[in-house]
Amino acid sequence: NKGNYEHYMQKEIHEQPESLTTTMRGRLIRGGTCKAKTVLLGGLKDHLKTIRRSRRIVFIGCGTSYNAALAARPILEELSGIPVTMEIASDLLDRQGPIYREDTAVFVSQSGETADTLNALEYALQNGALCVGITNTVGSAIARHTHCGVHINAGAEIGVASTKAYTSQIVVMAMLALAIGGDAISNQARREAIIDCLFDLPNKVREVLKLDQEMKDLAKLLIAEQSLLMFGRGYNYATALEGSLKVKEVALMHSEGILAGEMKHGPLALVDESLPIVVIATHDACFSKQQSVIQQLHARKGRLIVMCSRGDAAAVSLGGACRVIEVPQVEDCLQPVVNIVPLQLLAYHLTVLRGYNVDQPRNLAKSVTTE
Ligand code: UD1
Ligand code: BG6
Image 1 (cartoon, helix red, strand yellow):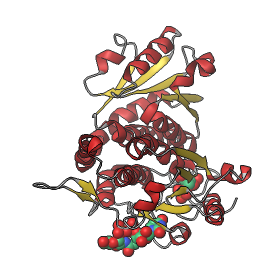
Image 2: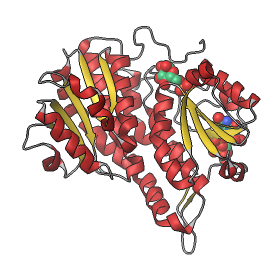
Image 3: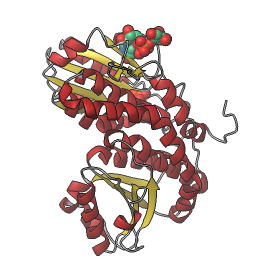
């Protein structure tokens, strides 16, 4: 049921304040006098000790689910102190990459049925790793075959392009980082700031959804482009990958997510006065580096669209030379949840304006159950 919306993708983008609320329901503990703020993931509580003892955490997934894990990687590394590596499921299988008993392998999948991810799970089980699922579908193959896990509870997702599952996956993995990190005094302030931010995150997403018309106007400007680049780094490298995946899969426009730190190692050669480039430069530890990226792209006459934190427009627009998208600022590790929303809206409007099928993009399937 699409309710008042024209397409499932549109509905699923706009219902993210509600889906995020459901994802967190019963899992955030506000604390109180003498009690610390904390998270409770029922499906993991008996396994946290084993996870904390593991030598490595490996995230495994495909498509948007992989991107969500990439967005959560920095906070998991920070709070757990355990090395976190990333695997695209098919690539792990192609290489028969090493997976050990001392590993915790985390399988991220909206459907819980993706063939490559499921095959990688069988492989990791054979190799003796502790296998954890992050799935949206109760009773799915991945939910059943993992040793333990967390349901993201985002509600059924119908649009082939994943939107609300992405933001709920990031939130669950941030909660996973908090749970694994435990209650070490050393990062108590950080932990509490993240938990406070989680409580308020649905409101921030509601705010950023107000950019809908602005993103439609931007889509009108970009409607006839051949290609669109997206530059990100740190927490928001994943945002660049996921934003460009949305544009590619539904708007059928070539789009590439680029790690800004790699700019001089190739991508800079593409920059000219016609190619549109989105630069994600919200305020975090990488901000000054992104400001320098913006200046260097501008020096080569790049056509820039900069996403920045509210209040930073003057610091990134180079005296009005760049179009700016201002978003509410949240805790750095949760900023990807806010930042992806305007890009989802952009991909949605580009698709409608270009006259393509939003919910059933050409050649793609919601659940890829064959290799
Ligand atoms: C569970 C109930 C929820 C109830 C809550 C009350 C289910 C599905 N969930 O939620 O309805 O409101 O208790 O405390 O009945 N699991 C995997 N792999 C996965 C995902 C989950 O093995 O990929 C396992 C978990 O380890 C857990 C079970 O499935 O044993 C349910 O997980 P989840 O729904 O996340 O647990 P709760 O949030 O505790
Ligand atoms: C397909 C979907 O390619 O599978 C994507 O179209 C999705 O939206 C990918 O990200 C992985 O699916 P899942 O269900 O394992 O998260």
